[in-house]
Length: 225
Image (tube, rainbow, N blue to C red; front, side):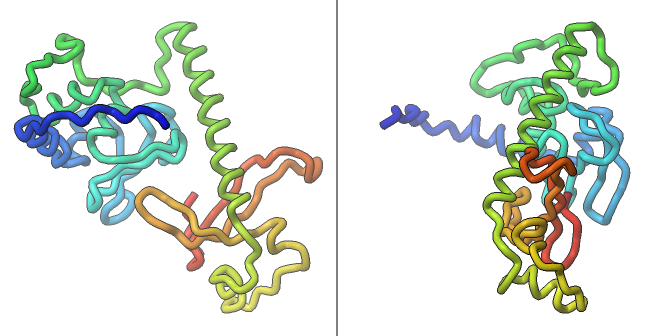
């Protein structure tokens, strides 16, 4: 059995400081960091990710006070968003969000460094380019792995809400599509459990080629990614 992490002593002052950081408004914080987001729906703002770029793969939800990036496969609360955008540690981010020093007395690791988001476009050197290329390669591999897990966990559409979705629209799927091209799966998307229809993308050269990606929508037909 693995060793357990030692339980820290209660620290109500520190906990209150962290909680104050968590309650910072996520949209105000994004704007303070210079993230370029535009209103997409009543509660959602979208734009380029400060880590991997793109156009609208990064989003924040002002109702849930969360963020999500489809490219990085990352999401979370306002603290996580600032960590993603600035590469600063947890304590630094809490100091930034509260404008108060760490009550434990640990100062910022880089007190003179401003809180500015990383730019996925401006690459300062060849080393930066290599780093970006490696990060991009790792993100692609991570997405392929995630897609393969979704696909393998799915099943045929028969006797599922996925079958009902097509039946209500008068769509008769050709033989062999269910289970081979389309599958039904209950998957996690952020904090939600989604009843999803998954459509597979595979190299046209043949079924032995690795999975290239998939498109999934909920059983009411709303695309999720």
